[in-house]
Length: 203
Image (cartoon, rainbow, N blue to C red; front, side):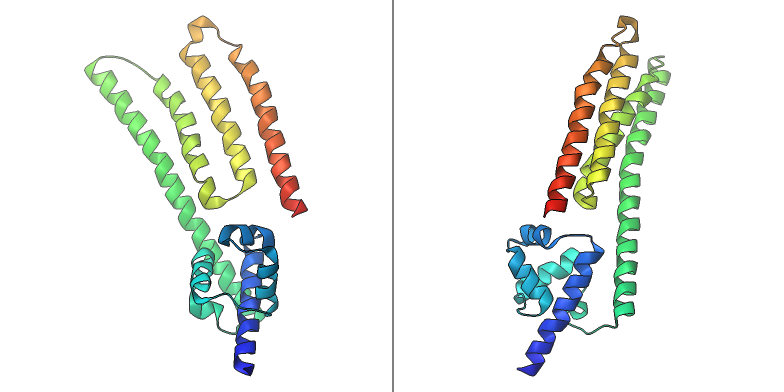
């Protein structure tokens, strides 16, 4: 009985440290795994312990092993391990994102060269259109980063690059009024960001 109680506290300490390392609230973790914030609080306090299936899901979410979750760690070694894991994940995700975005520019270059050589069409505007495509790919990585500021920045960059690309593409028509569209769009993006931040802090 004593061992079981100790295990609950060990798991609780590790879950608390991991959640804080991801800068998540108990409510956010509860929503992700379909539990109440009270259940998360009880896990972290060592009052109760998640079942083995949930522990496995938590380990996957935090990118640690079940052994790590159920083992006692010195505070500094735990922080160091979590920090190293988070750094490795960030670097790996960033490399994947850069690779995905680079494909857009490789394809744009191939299309430009083919059009130039086979139809003598100097369609340089394709590189302008590559910007909004790059930013929409970056936006898709919001699911990986789960960062509201990241989402806000790349959503803004996407819409601005889309408007600029459209303006340059149809330069002869002087469609400067397209930039007026960005006023309500940018305001909406800012308000959306502030509302989400407010809700997060409220939780």
